[in-house]
Length: 397
Ligand SMILES: Cc1cc2nc3c(=O)[nH]c(=O)nc-3n(C[C@H](O)[C@H](O)[C@H](O)COP(=O)(O)OP(=O)(O)OC[C@H]3O[C@@H](n4cnc5c(N)ncnc54)[C@H](O)[C@@H]3O)c2cc1C
Image 1 (cartoon, rainbow, N blue to C red):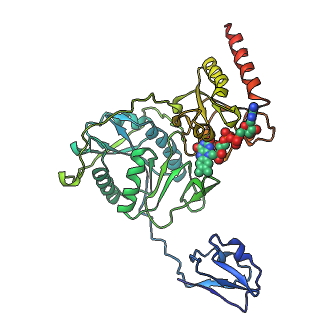
Image 2 (tube, rainbow, N blue to C red):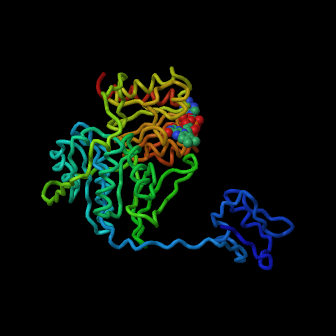
Image 3 (cartoon, rainbow, N blue to C red):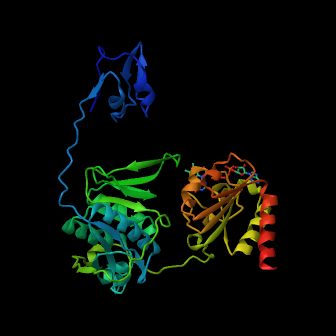
């Protein structure tokens, strides 16, 4: 594949040089010249005002996908208990299904997990593909990949979404590789393009500095993993029917190349910021580990969990499981109190689902105020104890 410059048309305007993400084209002696860094991405072709740039790259033909129908959700479970993210994905699946006027299905694998069908139905599944086998009783990469790949090949869904949990992050790329499908990992938003009906898969890109929206044009199903805690689950009641399709898999012992000997639970106390109704979060503005003390006091008065920005975790002021943000946890509390947090996009990515946000910052221009319902401009070391005292006084303590 090569990029060609028509020197009769090129005016040396440098538009291509500025727009090339790889510095693969430069203007020398008033004309554009392609260098060894060019990846033939074609950005310069689309942006040349003189139509002086062309290539021998052929437009890929989009296959006919009219027989691909349905929105599928991977119903993650462990020990017969549904993962919370499954309900969130079904909530999201309901709106995608409505937009496309297609059915919402869940894919449930395990052993003795039939009791979960009712729960899947309550959260919106109109159909459940159920594969039960003793070799599926605990999650293992190979058998799960094989069974799900077979179900996909036989039933041809249009969209398949999986939670970006440790299991989902292991499973999704394996299915994508086996079936030669595109996959967008770690999405924070999914919606339908009203023009072409394709799935718009939005995720942070370039170190979280911008949000990229990706479409899968050339393969089906369109596959994405979605971060837990980002979507809302929506119960629909039990009135609607749910069709159950029992899947006979061709699974044999040879498909299982690893053996699970035992599960060893983490000993340390697990902080579930995901379930917290109120979170008091601290940023670099707290100044030190000692500076977090007033936040813990406010949290106790509010019955809240304490969380922090990445800086606070890197400084060792809070343990890593309390980090909120793109590389930490995604939270959706009723109330998020952000103290001494600037509001960087990577932090906001983890707390934007909060119902109400109160921001306390001494800099009135701090971006966190854009995400806040109420803002207090002031020193957190004065404001936070004042808030705590006011709450305790109200409670009569
Ligand atoms: C790939 C990548 C992933 C990342 N992931 C995450 C992530 O998951 N979570 C995360 O949080 N960050 C993440 N970051 C880091 C992020 O970009 C920011 O650097 C970080 O969120 C800033 O933390 P901060 O708000 O505590 O600190 P700062 O940006 O330094 O802000 C401190 C704020 O405190 C205010 N302040 C100072 N003193 C006081 C006081 N006495 N009273 C009141 N206000 C005061 C200041 O005005 C300032 O606004 C990531 C970055 C990258 C590149």
